[in-house]
Length: 256
Ligand SMILES: NC(=O)c1ccc[n+]([C@@H]2O[C@H](COP(=O)([O-])OP(=O)(O)OC[C@H]3O[C@@H](n4cnc5c(N)ncnc54)[C@H](OP(=O)(O)O)[C@@H]3O)[C@@H](O)[C@H]2O)c1
Image (tube, rainbow, N blue to C red):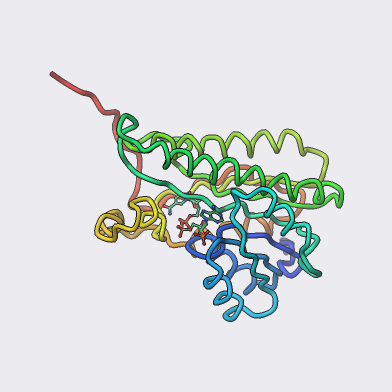
């Protein structure tokens, strides 16, 4: 019989565990027997998750943009959470869908600070320990937006292109260390993503998913668990997951 890793051996950090894909992944890993540290800025959500999932879920309120706080929090993890062997660097957001010439510089800054710099801080705080222990896995939440451009995707898509290339470059650095990398690249997933993108405008965010069978956060969580459970000699470096109702668009041509 094919031997998958026992999820009970996994000690997982999930950034962005308060909502959507991260919360679903925290639930799925705990259900499978893993220990999970879930982070986010909303403490009430983390406490609710701890109440729901029990002592194998360790809540950690921290903003990934705060390098000093993140580094200190991860350095001070209690046993049995301390020796992480899976880091799911998932926290991220899109802000705005305006064309670049009308986009907000603050939105661009927030996306770069979270999706790029926060992700780098997460890796910086956890990678040396995994390399030292000769075992680990970093999973990123990239996006199809890192491969395929769309109108209004400007800085968001560019941050996800960064995530993809950083993941591939890490793989180049980490060969031989026992630490593997995976970039999960979802298409449309129904979460709070669009509500955040449209700054809390529920009618606009609802339109994104109306009439579709979008991916669910649980669909992606299942793929993350799968990638982390394949035997250690197997490395899924990129995994693109679309809902069946979504595909590519034609090139746009402006005619006179
Ligand atoms: N939904 C989609 O269609 C889709 C498609 C492709 C990729 N993605 C990517 O999937 C990831 C998860 O998004 P989601 O769809 O699950 O959206 P979501 O429901 O809005 O969840 C986003 C998570 O990121 C956390 N987060 C945001 N900024 C943070 C910060 N500064 N510090 C710490 N945590 C922060 C949020 O927690 P707090 O607000 O509590 O801090 C929340 O837990 C993102 O990287 C997103 O780009 C989403």
